[in-house]
Image (cartoon, rainbow, N blue to C red):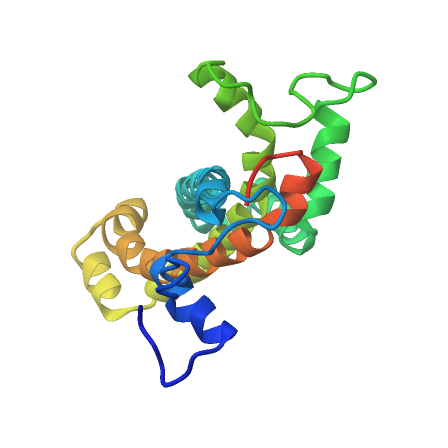
Length: 221
């Protein structure tokens, strides 16, 4: 085992212990659960994978939805629909995720409203791929809404800034249409900050997953 000039409980927990056979948390050995007596890693890994699936699918969905929506808002800034989307996205961005989760359950998993989706829970093993997707819809929607609002507003702002660049002026001088300039030239430059922001959102959603997973009774981390 690795030792750092000390032999105490903290260092044995951190770097490992030859006598107990522990490798230490720095090498992925979190010891055994005080409740079940089983290795923590074997219990944590499947739950981490479930949380990872929700967050990954949510961010992927939010990213690809935000692109056409933001382009539409840039191309049609004065339309009533664009202004309505601005208001909706502002509300979604400031709304707490756990409140959205409760609202989705009240609306779409309530026999008195629309009993379309299951209330909560992880599908039973062997249920099939469609059953897993069915149970994923509400949690993924809950995570995606805030991310869609943020990515769309961010991408819209970036597109407007890029459109004032010199290479866009050159493209206009060549006679390219406004739509073609956005899709072929401005969009790929405006996407860079959004891609960077995804990592921050991923960490934030993983850290805050406990609230949503508790509401949906999702067996996550």
